[in-house]
Image (cartoon, rainbow, N blue to C red):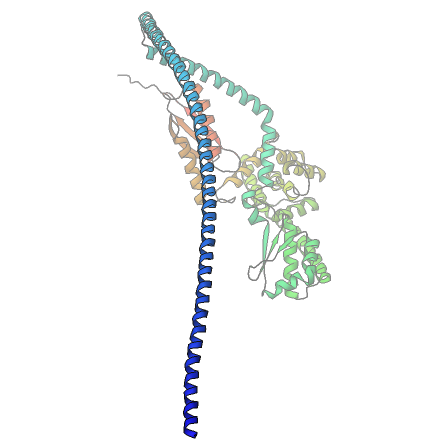
Length: 512
């Protein structure tokens, strides 16, 4: 019973499994069939959708291609129209150019005909001109070149002669009208404005023990230097120059006062405004004593007595005055000695001659303080202090402003020229002096017709020997003028230079 039951159960299980397997297989096959149907439907729908989409895309592409084609055709039409318009314009321009070319060709033909006619006329004129020249040469007996040279020579001689006469006339008038004024102006300019030597004659240098002293001289906020500049009227230049202060001022006496005061302050060591004022006052008194001592020494050296004390003081001020680098006090003493020596030779009053020579430049002591030339100032001073008429005339005439009225006045002129013009007296070295003389002679020698030239009187006169065959009497005036202008352009010199031309004709024969 048990085994039959188990077998039955086992068979039942197997049968159930088989039945289940088949059942599940049928179900699965049924599901697969359904899925395949559904897939087929989906694929079919997809194909239908794809076909519809394809038709839609093809339609859109066809429409786009038609639109692009229309645009291209329109653009092509526009370009064809533009090209046609450009072709029409070019054609019109070509027609216009053709018309202009035809007009130019006609004008060119006309111009060619006219040029041919002008050439014929020129040839006829040339032939007529040659015939006239030949006739003129036959009548005059001269060639055209000879006739031209002859006419030019005649005109040149006439012009030279007239120019010479005009120059002489103008020179005479200018000398009569402007000699006095021009001398006065030039003398004032040279004596008061010795520009080439301003830097050397308007500064003084004070040595310092050390550079620390510069700060003490400047003082707190510059009060010391301002006080010193205000009291003396001199500019103090404090720069990086080691152990030195530069005093700059046009008045040499004030500059000397500032120099002495500053040196005293440096020695004393106490630099403040009240001490500066005290030292400046002491320096002013000291300079005043030096001025009087120098004036008395000059009168003693020259033997001139009886001068007014103020004139003696003014003479002492000349110690601090220079002209072209030459000390005016020493120049005045030298002129006094020279005048006395020449007066002794001529038998003239020696003392009066020395007096006039010593006082001839007295006006230079105050010419920076008063208006006018040093000559007019000197005359005023001499009149004020009751000097004699001979001395006053000598002072007034020593630069040729008036005519000398005595031998003493002439001697003062000569002595002044000798003292000023000798080599080394005024700021000009012997080397530059000799070079200037050589340049004077070279300038003259470069002119045609000059045989020899000599610089004489310390370079104040240029004497030139002329070849008589090359330069006429009328031409000498022009040559002198040209040489003087050349000297003015190429040289720098004090005063004036006289250009003296000498033309000499000699005839030599022998008696046998």
